[in-house]
Picture 1 (cartoon, one colour):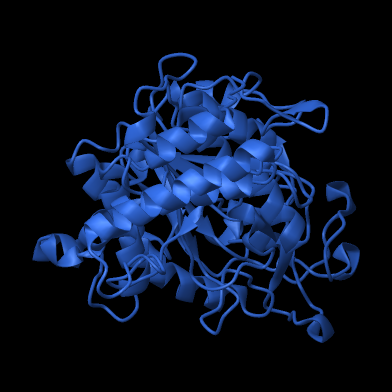
Picture 2 (cartoon, helix red, strand yellow):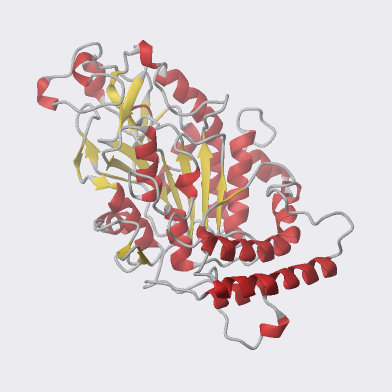
Length: 468
């Protein structure tokens, strides 16, 4: 699918001038048919910033505890890490307890008791991998399908391919939890038109900055001002060579005009029942922040927003999942903030009939090493784990995914993916497939080449396993 919009089409559709109403128009965010019947219409991507350890969450390794304090046997080989030297560190056992849950008997760590209660709706993929062992490269891999800056994010590609079913809210919404180690490129549109980049929503009654009209300006006056501004800007665009940032700004003016009513209503969580707010952990000092984001995500997909990404952890004072020093303590803290809200999201979506059409993805930029970090000078410690992109876990639910299954495996110590390995290109190809898009056909011409999210790679075998 290669989608092109003329400057005039984008301009006319975005601003809706009465004088131009007779012209054929195409809104770049209008909902479009997928390549083939889809099982998912929307995506909620729960991103655990910093890299959650698969060994403390969804991938139990008894051998790890047997080797605790010893050097890794030579038979496992070696890997390159960010700070520590793999061959110089000792194995660190897992302090968590794993139990089997649900009819499926999938093993889950005790730091996720509420998510474990939803395990029969979840498919755990224990064999994810890529080769980005720094945060920036890994974040770009998982979000943009490429280790370096400049590529569009998976959310942008999704909206580019399918548009949105909501005309008064952004098509791609991001809710952050502080700064991102790689910067905002992970939700930007890259070389795609700027209309497809993510919009950041804040907490509170005013989720989007600068949305209110100036004091004293009536809706009629504002409409007249936008129409006049649009007329002049169209004249400018006709003389320039397709400035997508200007085109996107024009579209954003019109969207902002519509959002002045939609956004406050969206942010008003008081309309939710007390039982619903309690389900998400609202009012609790630990879970309220992430719980509010998860509840907002449900409200967004309910209104037709195509792609929602929620971040747990940031570069601010609250910390993230980057367990270099005290991995176990770090993960207990971060899981306490997210476990109940995530389970609430799955439960709430399911009770409203939304889980069938909403693909929920959980994961981070990589996993953690089976050996200790052991490098105090670089911020690590004997009870911490370094970055491990060579084998880690994510999970998916909803959107046609049949839960209660485990796909793939890492080796006996959780170092590498060894059974049914899933590269990030395969993950993205499968996400698009569940949304009804052929990843090889979703292309965009840039600098003489047709680019796609999966570059020249990607396999939909994961999607087939998820639906089987």
